[in-house]
Amino acid sequence: MNLVQAGFTELSHDEAYYWLYAKYLNWGHFHQPPMIGWLIRAGYTFFDNELGVRLASVLLSTCSLHLLQKMLSGKDVILFWTIIFSTFLINIGGFFAVPDSPLFFFTVLFLYGVQKFLRDKQAIYALFLGVIAAAIIYSKYHGIMLMGAAVLVNLNLLKKPVFWLIPVVSLVLLIPHIYWQVDHQFPGFQYHAKERFGEAFEWEHISAYPLGQLIILGPLTGFILLWSAFAFKPATPFERTLKWCMILVFGFLFLVSFYGRVEANWTVCGFIPLIIIGHAYLSKHQHWRKWFYILAIPNILLITGLRVHLIYKLVDPDIAYNKTDEFHGWDDFAELVTSIAGDRPVIANSYQMASKLSFYSGKTVPSINVHRRGNEYDLLQLDTAFYGREILFMHAYHMPDDTLIIRPDKEKVYLGRVYHYRNFRKVTITPDQPELIFKAGTEVSIPVTIINPYPYPLTDHPSYRNPVHLSYHIYKDHEYYEWDGLKTKLEQDIHSRDQQEMRLKIPEEPGIYELELCPVSRNFLWWQNWKRFRLTVLENQEE
Image (cartoon, rainbow, N blue to C red; front, side):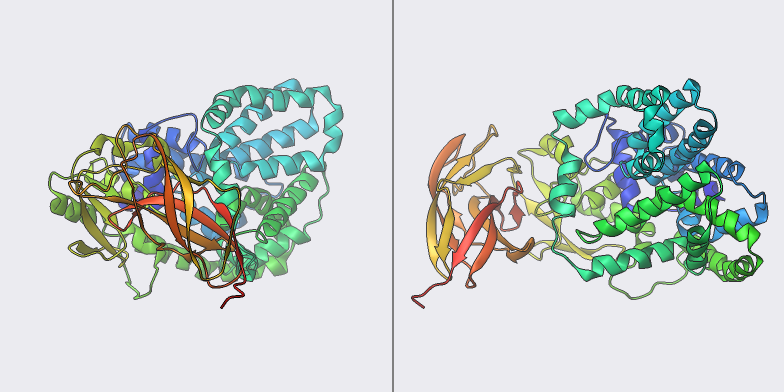
């Protein structure tokens, strides 16, 4: 079933992005470890289409469920497969080429190894767990939560010399990945620390977390399975480990939701102990098992209908953001963009759109991520191949003379012509004064130092069709306060390093802000490097 679904369903945005990992293999990537790229490359070698992208993930999913069934204490096969088919994340996610696929597979193997190691602490099991632990980290960093929980529940293992084979083997196998992270200054970790969890506190993040878990566990049967897992009373060290691993993974991510948005699928490694002990509880409690079967019927029908919809669009609701629109019409969209562009390269202002267009057009479509978060394209720098050429830039801002097109998800995008394309992302603009303290509502000039590492100059010369100016963004509580700052003309071409004055319009309200200085060209190509400076705004007594 998953093979059929994999072959006839268009790629999601994230899958197209991970296909980029497979195209440019490495020991690490911006957002995720390299395992998903390796798996996609393996399948894509046989089939250069959607099936090839997903082939390895489908095979791993099948192996995962087979091994998971063998680990059950109860042998109620019908109950097990009812749980699997009614669990949204496992049913739907069984064919997607995303990091959760190898994470799920290697977590099952890890728990299988833990079960053996707790019974018989032999070196062979420790070596096995060391290899699998490294594979988990190569799949998705979130697996560290479950492995850490397993150690916390069994602290007595730290006294066993054989236990230390596990971290030693893992670290040895992870040396190439660690070296890559150090060499690239830990891009993914910086993203999560500074951007993902730098948001202001919101109750919405906290309330969305348990709701999201119930949906991906069911949605109709999720609360019964969750209740069963928490009500289960462990009788063996392994069952105790399973229950506490589940509690610690779900509990830790609940605490994380106080600091930022937690994606529902981040708990995938906690699903495995939940299913094992939830199955054990339901197999012995007829009342709950009966209600689970009753609710599983509409639940499975609902999920089956969604799977069919991913292949053939059954409904087209007129809503602002429909997640299933990711799976329909993107091959036609890529053909439309290609026909408009002709011989001109296309550069997108979204790493997902760039990946989707690259996959379905067969052409290289870089992303330059103007005023968007960093990603893999910042490391690859594919746009350097188009320096000096006329390109079409796909963006979301209405500018005169740009071509409007409608994406399959009903979003408006524009294709804007950029002459003599240049990238200025690595240009840095730094205030020369140590502190930025000004009165509210005033307009000031500050001295700045501009460093241009590129072999071409920053210029606003009249002969240059894409003049560059200096500008800024102002943030308040990690949100944009002012996007379109004052523009300052360059006093002269900047070839390497220079200094000049830059104009700022200070916010009207006193408080603490953050200031980001960046060059801008064509009024929408904001070349951000994400470096921010503290801006203190004092009350203006003169007003």
